[in-house]
Image (tube, rainbow, N blue to C red; front, side):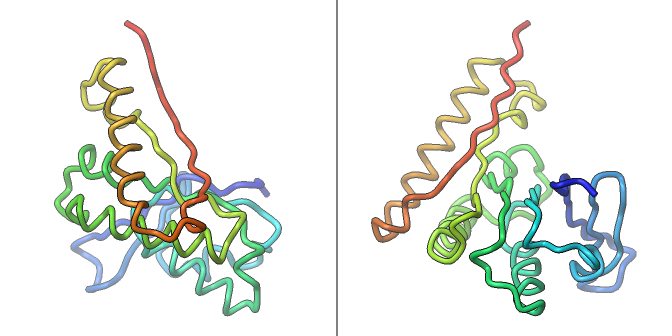
Length: 175
């Protein structure tokens, strides 16, 4: 078993009943719940990385952990939670508006920094911009712009809540 489960995506498909979702892990699709996906896995012993923007998959994962009797403080992982880049790159119309996405991100940061010290609630990436035609300078500018916007949104938090860990991913290709 890998120590990290990567590339989870929740898809809303029109042919599924209302509210049904497909959770994709790597090359596998799991049509069911987070409980089914992590059945038999000691989630307090692994680090997970969710490629998700927003609270839905995180809430399901945290609820499953509590149902198992685990303390959320023992969970370890990262949410590749970069709503501004996702809003620009996905252009799907299903993501919250940037102002709402920043508020949701701020809530996630506040919750995880107070309750879950081993959780990284934010990963500031910029490769999405490159994939959509930005050059290296523009990509870096968007990443720093997003970091500034996220920091500004965190200023409403009490000072102790702002001591979060954030990761940054930059894909600065030349040429």
